[in-house]
Image: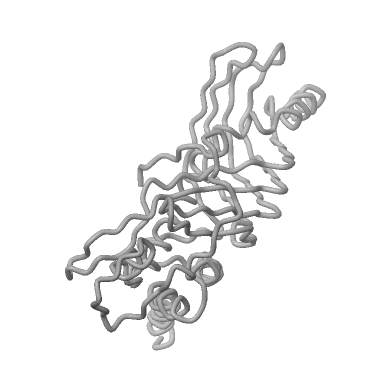
Length: 287
């Protein structure tokens, strides 16, 4: 009985201690370039995706749960109304960081990730018509996405915290992702009464997978944006913004705090162009 009481407390304490993004980033940036440290911050996040981060009010994202997604399109040749429920997304924690870079000139942060494979499963209800094919049924569905690439950008802005200290924070974060290959299987189409037509519809959905998934993408993008923004804002909260920004702008006030000073070398020059508006979609800001 005692173990049952203590175990959740110990797990929570471990998660809180393991998510010291601010202290870890400030300590790392005092020794090496900031971009390498930001990449390590994402590595520190990886194991915590399975437990969530209560201190940052971040839920579990491996797996990621989406309660309900509504979809309706009444524009020829597709006229469909569908609801997806109890959607579970797995594989996000296997991400590979292609790059994460803070640019001192434009004061932006750019990030690109690759997820080798993401799997989505859940339940659906659907009615409508695709081209000349009737579409109806309810049941389970599975989706496999291979070669998912996410690209994002944020503004880096100095803000004053409650203690009167200037810190760095991210805002206007945009994240979008593209899918290399997709495989969709909707079970029990037409209530299992017409296998030939069901196979034809599944084939059509796979041939147009990117279009089919465009309604799911905003919700996943929103959750990715929320995850990245909160973790990196927590990490940035201990960086000495006053001295950092002064150094970047070539200003020498002649007064240094006891906090570690970062020179402009902490920000290596970016070799990656900023994502264009065609690469980055606006994620919804609702929580």
